[in-house]
Image (cartoon, rainbow, N blue to C red; front, side):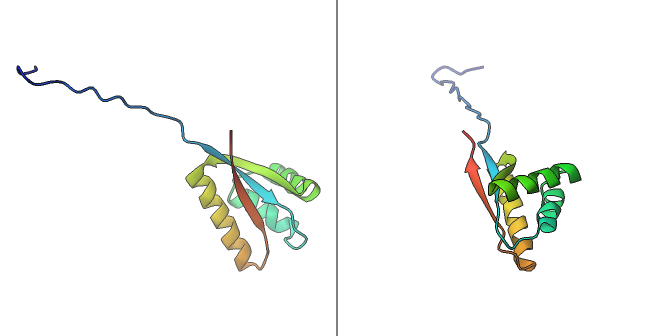
Amino acid sequence: MAVQGQTKEKTKINLREPRHYRVIMHNDDFTSMEFVVAILIDIFKKDVLEAQRLMLMVHESGKAAVGTYPYDIAATKVRSALERAQKEGFPFRMTLEEER
């Protein structure tokens, strides 16, 4: 109940879906195919056949999108993959592209 002289404020809430980012895997001449498949299975949760298919796309095309996620999730997956690559001595490269 509003008391005389008081005004009610209406707050408009504008909810938007978070932007999504494509994780792009890049080919190089040193990172093993087995390592790429393991990353796709362990970090990106792909099954074996999908992981092998994506690895071949990266190998043959030079790069491939391996998943689309909100920014925080995409960045975390990339960071995990790159840390693992560094520990194993691979110059593995991944980037993020904003989805439009």
